[in-house]
Image (tube, rainbow, N blue to C red):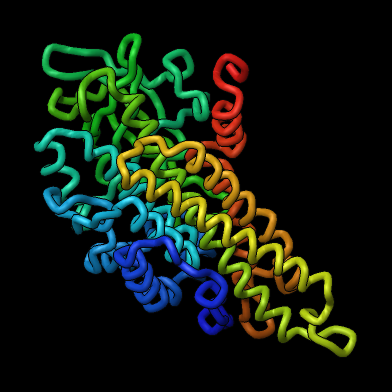
Length: 409
């Protein structure tokens, strides 16, 4: 048992959405109702079950599709909701999902924002064959840039997955690593070296020459399955090029920028959950004859965290709203939001475990089966500081905006 579903949400009393469009407020409430009803009851099992194909939350995935959540980021002409502020609505969706499960938020991020976002650059044929079933939840999408020796550095010199042009398409050889959703995905949007440039290809994972490894065993985000994908003389038809040959890096970077705004939202969601659970504990746990929350040290700490959550939410919303205004690379806000929100979640998670003491270190208390959310977030939040642009890279982006490339390189 856990108090996960009964804690007070302080967001509504402490955070005032004065600048957020009404459309977005409605999406937040819609996704929150869905998450409270469908994500919260299964979040503990998702977060504490070892990675395997059988453990993928397929039933929840289907429910999200049926509820139209996968349609939120997309225009009406491709089957989406046609919202005026799709990037902001998507980021808010990710925050609300991450409040209960960062694994679930990450699954949706990769499926919709990375795979789906890249497919928006594709032809009508690609949209019909891959994007339409992705929105319906009929196919699971994945997105691959990272390799065993290439992650932050996505240069032609660093990458080893090669696409050789043929008369009617490409032959792909190489290997990708840490590819989310890949153990259960139907296809991957793949960044390849194509001569002196890069190209994005859609590769179906049951094609000859494609092999997906076993799911990785990770520190956290257990419900977000990752694995290596191997490509051995894989024939990819020319019609599966996303955009134009040679545009791959631009498409990937634009997609990842949207992704890092979403990761900022997930960090904010985790921080909000930490806050709510911590306040409940500080009010009810007693030491030396009084509630822990009566100690000024923790009063001041939570005052600081409330202010920082306010800042984190404002940053990611501002970055997302700029994307909705047509800014494909909304800097410095996207980099600031990603670094600030995920760093906040990491620092706060350590404090939250301290607030819960020994209980915060337990996956489950054997005596009564009780468990506490802070332990799961403590494990889940670390990867948010690393994926979709490590926080050190975000600081480099911010610094470049201050000093210029002539100084920072």
